[in-house]
Amino acid sequence: MTKAGSKGGNLRDKLDGNELDLSLSDLNEVPVKELAALPKATVLDLSCNKLTSLPADFCSLTHLVKLDLSKNKLQQLPADFGRLVNLQHLDLLNNRLVTLPVSFAQLKSLKWLDLKDNPLDPALAKVAGDCLDEKQCKQCANKVLQHMKALQADQERERQRRLEVEREAEKKREAKQRAKEAQERELRKREKAEEKERRRKEYDALKAAKREQEKKPKKETNQAPRHTNSNNRSPACAQCPLESPTRSRGTPGTVSCVRPAE
Image (cartoon, rainbow, N blue to C red; front, side):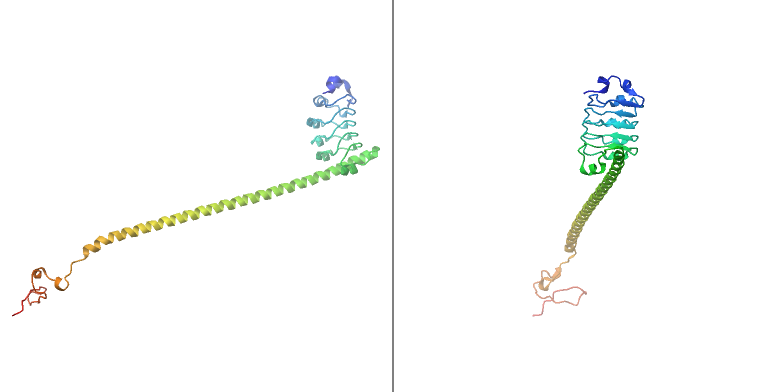
């Protein structure tokens, strides 16, 4: 790549007051570092070179007041071109520009602009006009700035709209997540309650079965033997051949066998 420092010698040698002429230098790259070291060079002519683009750090040359980039092959300007806030005169004649960066709206000091002979977007070309004389170039600067400010405002509104949409989408995602977590908590709570109820029923069933087991031996022990008919005899009558013993008038509560008289 050809740089001014290597082909055109020391840039200070080309500095004439506040003007630095690097036109017709066969440049395909801008010597930004060397230019930054010359803050007095507020007028810079880079016309009639082979520049296809400007490096991002070109926008650090905020001391520039007048800039001629005409008759190059520039396809676009850096996104931060609007940082050149002191720029008053800008010549972009005969390049390959289609659009301008939105930051162009920040060039509040711009008073003169030439965009002729560029394949501009139809809307931008209509705003720019013909730039055939000084008056038209001044009008071009004013109209293009207003146009770019409107585009910047539109882009900002669109950005805000997208942010709002993203915020609403995020809120919905968070609400959906909270609902899902609440549902999962409720499900776990219900399962826990069901498990607890199942265990309680098992516990009650075991307690009831245990009580039934404890009742059975006591019932059998408390039952006393009884004599019924011929079997309901006292031990004294057990060997008596009489089927129906006769209660005697002896000691109350005793039964004695009295053989009937023959």
